[in-house]
Length: 462
Ligand code: PMP
Image 1 (cartoon, rainbow, N blue to C red):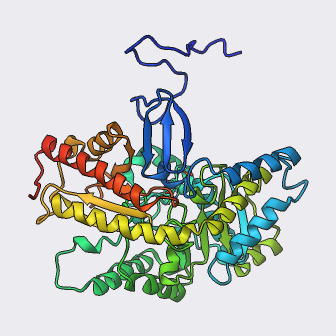
Image 2: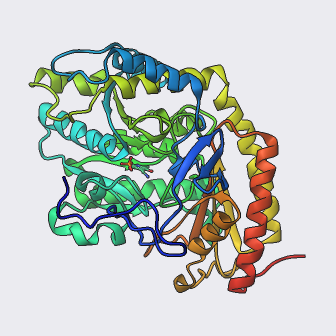
Image 3: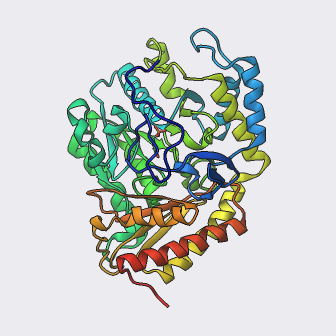
C-alpha cells in the first residue's frame, strides 16, 4: 500500500483540476483517453480527436488493429515472458528474420530492446565494443548533428544536439562533438541545393579531422529528421558523401531510424530513399506501432562477429527480445504488408504535402514544408524573407498545437532552443489514413492557422 502517497480520487469536482500521483513533462493536464480506432482517439467525455501525429510518430499502422490484438492474445495465452538467457523464443527469431530481410544489404543481425533510447544506446555500445574488439580502443567519439534528438537516457542524450535538454546532466555524461543539421533551405548563398548538401556533409570531415580521426568512433544521424528538425531532408548529394567520409576515416555510420523507419516515409527505412548503407540502424516507434514497447538495432555480421568472438555483447536489458513485444512487432509487419500501408503512406504523403503547400501559400509565415511520405514537417517564422523567428515568448508552436487540439486535431509541434530552426510542427497521421481524412486534417489545420495568425499578428494572403 502507498501509505505516504497523496490520496487521489477518481472524480474531481466540476472545473477543478483532476488530482494525480503521476507527473510528466508539463503541468498542464489532458483529458483521460477512452479508446482509439484507425486515425481517431476518443476521450472519456466522448470527444473525438484525429491523431494527426500518430502520438509522437508511433502508431504507424493505426489504432485498434484487430489482427495485431488477436496475435498478441494468442501469444499471451502461450507465454508472455521467458528470459533470453534461459530460452530463445519464436516471435523474436521470426521478427529478426523478417526485419533483416527488409534491411539494407548486409545488416543481418538484430538485437531487440524496448524503445528508441535503448536502441540508440545499443548502437553506441555495439560500435564501441567493436572498436575495442578490433584493436581500436582509441576510438570513442560519436559525432552528431545540432539540433537533433536521439533519446533521453544518458548515452543517447550525449548524442542529442539539444543543450536545453541535456545541460543539467552534463557532469554525468560525455558531451559529443556536433556538426550543423543540413538545413540547406535556410542558406542564402549562390550555391545549388546539391552543392550545399556536399558542403554540409564536408563539415563531418572537417569535424573528424579537428577531433583527430583516430579518436572518432561513429557518426549518428537521422536520414529524415524528426523531433528536433521536423522532417528535415538533406539535399540528395549529402547522403552518399557522408558514406564516403565515414569510409575514408574508418568511422561507423549509425542511422537513427526510430522515427523515420517502419514504413512511415513511403519506404521501409528513411535511408532507403537514397539507398544508404549505414553500418548500424536503430529502430523503434513504428515497429511496435504502440501495441508493445519495442525497439531494435540492426548491424552487420562484420561488426557483430568480432565482439561475439571476444566474449559477447556486453549489453542487455531484462525485456530484450520479449516474446509478447516481438509477437506484436511481427503482426505489425504482417498488417503493413496485407494492407499495403507503405504504398499508402507514399500516396497519402504526397496528397498531404500538396495540401500543406496550399496552406503555405495562404500563410506565408510557413517558411518551409518538407518531408517524405507521412513524415511531413513545416517551419514557421515571423518574416519569410529574413527568416526572423517568431519571438519565443509568443510560444507559436504551443499555440498552434493547442488551437489544433481544441479543434480535435493532434499535431506534433516543437521549438529547439539555440538551434537555427524556428517553431516547427509535424503532420504524421497513421499510415491507414484515407484521402478524405487528409482533407479533414488540412481543414482543421487551416482553421487553426487562421486563429494563430490572428493571435500573433502573422501575415496571411487573400
Ligand atoms: N531517436 C529518435 C530519432 C527519436 O525520435 C526518439 C523519440 N522521439 C528516440 C530516439 C528515443 O526514443 P524513446 O522515446 O522511445 O526512448
